[in-house]
Length: 229
Length: 229
DNA sequence: GTGGAGTTGTAAGGCGGATCACATGACAAG
DNA sequence: CTTGTCATGTGATCCGCCTTACAACTCCAC
Image 1 (cartoon, chains in turn yellow, green, purple, cyan):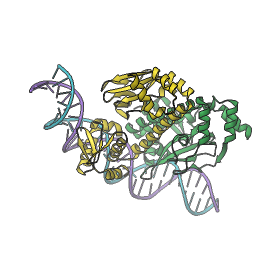
Image 2 (cartoon, rainbow over the protein chains, first blue to last red):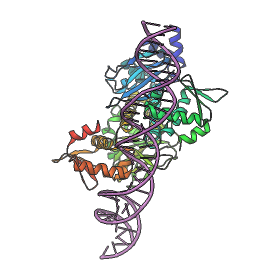
Image 3 (cartoon, chains in turn orange, red, purple, blue):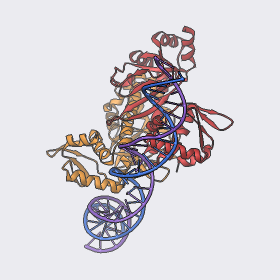
Image 4 (spheres, rainbow over the protein chains, first blue to last red):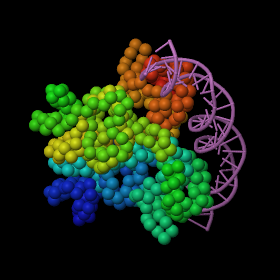
């Protein structure tokens, strides 16, 4: 276990600037957490006093809207940082984080992480970079969501998921993440029915294919055209 | 001018951790820029090699969508940081920044700012905090935009603008930012016509009042109800 | 394996908001 | 003061998507 923990941090590019001493310090203060599929990592309103790094599995982060609908903010997978707002500002969680597969994470107390950032300024730069990238990505997504049709947004979604979950295959690119129509709807701000119809259309037009709740992108180019329509 | 520059950085809470030496260093490497109303600070595709801090005025940041519509990402005002992605990742701007009033900003080369962050780790923490807050705010906005009606989104917008531009008044809260209907539309992802109708309704119901392109919130409570409807 | 819950397919009806189309008003430049 | 440009008010039409409503299907738990 000790070896595995050490290996993890040393191979996560967020920590590329750490010294051996700092690695040891961090390893000693991190806790390995296992969360079973569909179990919550944290819930809205929980104390936000630590941040997480995904070791394996997938975490889904969602936000409940006033009218009870669920907006999925995103999926976090291996090596991604999660709940880092605990380090900077938040004292309560405003979103829900839920294990989407059986997941293991390393948890680090916010205060400890702050200490480490103060000790190693390069880490601060790396974290800022990560947060900034996340921000840019979301900003792009907002543009998508606001002005495009459901078909377009769905195409965007599949292409976007490709980045983290895409696996190339003889037929095209498999999005290696099981998603129900309802969940896709939560990602693109649409209803389940609309997604069902849109998927039917995309299949009919030969752009995608579905298999065991996974999407296979057959015609990446056409999908891109649709996404930017 | 020199005195004013010094005053600025020393009174911007982002820099509360700097030493006297560091202040001098930063002052020496920052450039005061004046941009007239409606002039651009930077455009999409420009080199992203420095970041800005608003000294006075207002900067509007927009993103052009594929179909040519304009989404306003936000307004940046005194003491806010702008274009900081230059420090972390971006090499080209993906958004447009445009002076909304006559504006003055301090520009700092991305490389210099990185140097300063490495010298002073508390600064890194402060910057991370700022970016993280920005991210959370946008995340909240996405939830709003996706699931609410145009009326609701407009109400949310006015309340949101209150935070940076609100001025209390005998009648209520004045949103001290001149906005055309078209611009409001760009902020909430709607068309100009829809905004016109919505404003008419809000006025009719006595929730707001308009005066010289400025909105005055008469019934904050009712507006909040509408925003969360 | 069976039951029950959750997922998917499909359809009718309605509404919010986009689009198109002007008229009027406000304002800035000449 | 005049002219042109941009903002605003208002209406008609149209379409995408939500809503509601089922039926069939899948999958997991017991």
